Length: 223
Image 1 (cartoon, rainbow, N blue to C red):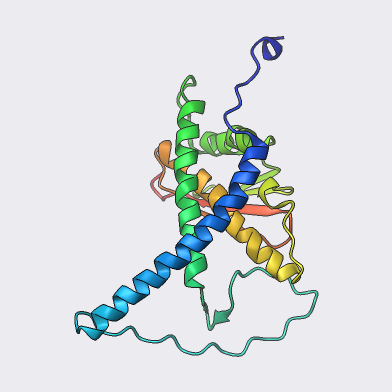
Image 2 (cartoon, one colour):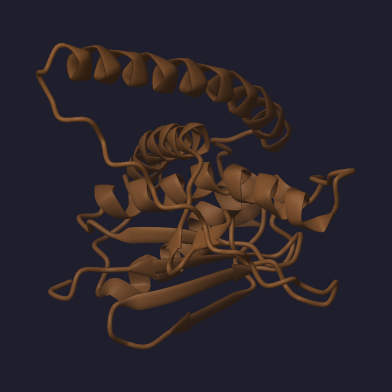
């Protein structure tokens, strides 16, 4: 009865968030490309003026092992040795999406925690992310939560809404690559929520099979 008389307040409209994400990714993609080109031009001018040494070119990538159709695709980029060769424009896009998500997550967390008591421990905070934050943005709870009890938590959503409708005519690897871009803002939301609660965490999104998405949260050792 209490839930009917005082329904929970909705802070985020799911459909609006989906449309916003699509337009935001396209807009920031173009913006990041312009910013990267401008930075390279300035760097080149400084090199030509003798103000900074020229950058060392990256070594050529090693030939990759030919993968079969059964091999799972877990990497966003091709690899040279043990280091991923990351596209600069794409990295700039992910950074901007994560930055925006961090602000959104922090502000929503402040509203959600306004009338509630202090959290007893870090596990309660992670449960708050799995339940309250997830329900606010994606109308559900996390499907699975795992931890090693040493500051690392793994959140798994088997039907993650921001990537459920993503596909690509170029095949599964390209669809997963694009999905990882769309997971950058949600990772930022988690990071921003934890930051507002006093934790400077590292949040990494991983997608190996659509529409499942996994987020690894690493808290500082003294948390």
